[in-house]
Amino acid sequence: MDPQDPVAQGLATMASAGFEFGGDDEQVAHDVRTMWEQLGSPVGAFDAAARAIAGLPQRPEVSIADQARRRAFERAVGINPVEVELTAAMSARELLERMARSVAC
Image (cartoon, rainbow, N blue to C red; front, side, top):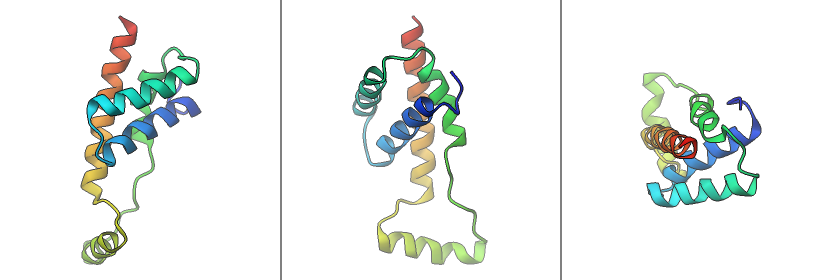
């Protein structure tokens, strides 16, 4: 399966968002596996989703001079810091890679 496939994109987004909103490995894995099963358990989906993480939309870069203002705005409206998003994406990729290996066994 290609990382651009809508199934891979959906699983990648779900995993990343699950971690971003405070889910742990077990909960995120349960949710992603449930979605995968509802989609018919497509072969190669976890591996493609792990690769799709790198292509998920990222926030636009801002100049150093504007970073403090952006952080203040994000705090005011309840947006997680970019570091939380990046950590969530890395955790999602690691989880999806483990899931891909477990299905391949």
